[in-house]
Length: 327
Image (tube, rainbow, N blue to C red; front, side, top):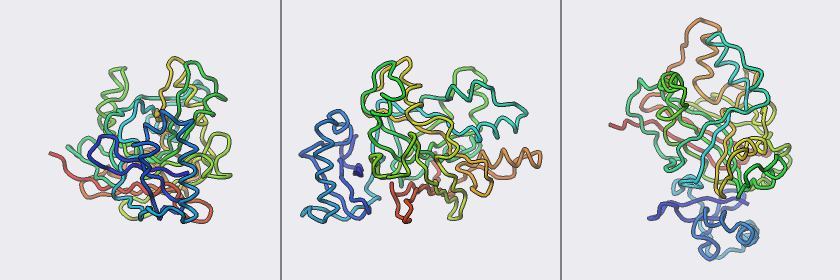
C-alpha cells in the first residue's frame, strides 16, 4: 500500500491512503490520525489500511479526493530516529581517491552510519533554505526504510521482518562544513541540515520483483536544474542491504517504531548512470583534472528525485525542491 501525510495544524499531519497510481487519496482518522500512530499500532492498523487501499484502487471509496503532492509533508514530518548509512562504496571510493586515500578493508563489512537530525524534516516540495552559499549546499538522492519496533541485538533476519515502509530521500548536505566537523573527531552536525523525503511511503510489496535481498533494484532518477543528472540503480552496487543496515543500528540500541534508516547516496561505477549528488561529480573532476569544476547549489537551483516502476509509473511521487535564500 501507499501512504502519505497531508500538512495540517498538527506537527504530525494527517495520514492519507494513496492509490497505486497516485491519483486519489483518502483520510483514515478512524484507523490512525497520523502515520506514527499507525506504526505504533501496526499489527491492527496495517490490515485496516490495506482494506482501504484495495477499495481505493477499485474506485470503491466514496469520499476519495484527488491526490495533491503539494499538500504533503514528508511521510513522517518528524521521527524518533533518522540514521543514514553509506552503503554504496563506489561513492566512498571516489571521495577517498580524490584526496589520495584508499578505502579501508573494514568498510566492506562494517557499515558507515551517522545519526541525523530527525525533529524537523522538510516537505518534499518545500524550498531548501540556504543561509550562506559558501557552506557548499548539495543534494543527495537516497532510499530509506521506516521500521517497526526493533529489539536490541536483533539479527539481520529479524530486522528484515521489521521493515514497514520505503521512501526516497534528499539528504541535504553542507559540504564545506564537513571537513572542520570531521576534524573534531565527533561526526556530522551543522553540515547536515533538514532532510526531505518523498511524498509517498510504500510497503515493500508495492515494489514487486524489484524488492529482493533487502534492496530496491530500480534506478533513482535525478534531474538537476531541469536536466538529467543521474539514474544509478539502487540495488546493484549496494554493499549492505537494508536489513543489514538496520541490524547495524540495533547492535547497541533498540529502535522505536517509526525509525528511519537511509541507504546513503546511490552510486554506480558506470559513469553513464551519472550521480545522485554534486560532490561525487566534483570528486571525479578532481581525479581527472586536479580540481573541481562543478559548483555547489546556489539560490534558484533545483533538484528532482523520483523512482519509476518497469511501466514508467512514479512509485513514491517526486521530491522537487528549489534553493531559496534564508537570512
